[in-house]
Amino acid sequence: MFCAKISKYISDSQALFQECIDLGKEINLKSANLHSAFDNMADRMLKIAELYSVLKIDKNQGLFEKLADVLTGTGENFMNTGELINQFLGSRNMRYHYLENESILELWNLRHEFSLLYCKREKDL
Image (cartoon, rainbow, N blue to C red; front, side, top):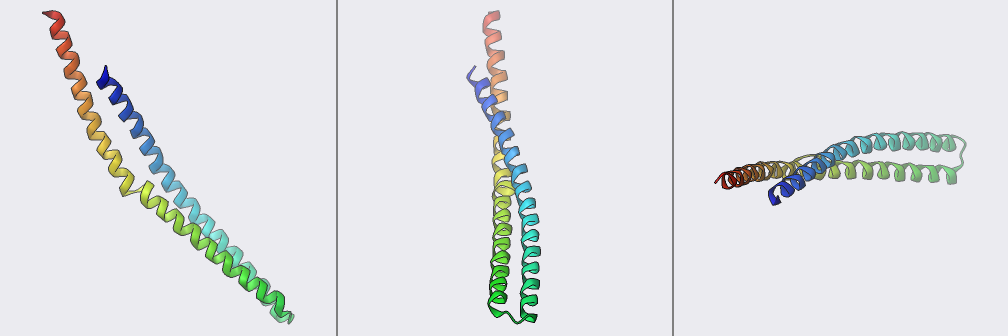
């Protein structure tokens, strides 16, 4: 009975590990898309700053240049965060736990089979 519960627990945790791996990859992909969106917004802000430069309105030009810098930095932050999440959840680290649980699951399943076989032989006596 105990072996079956442990096997179920390990099997459930493997499903959660796999879900974390998939979500880590998805977050990385979406953060890269968000990074490119912020870069596009920064480019638009720079174009607006150039327009104010042509119109010789320096105060607004500086504002939009700084806004473009903030957007670029925010996009980089999203990209780096996505890569870190993917590094931890989507690749080696979480896969290690997943594979480690797989071998433990096999061991507990084997132990459960032998336990059932032993109980059956004891009943037959």
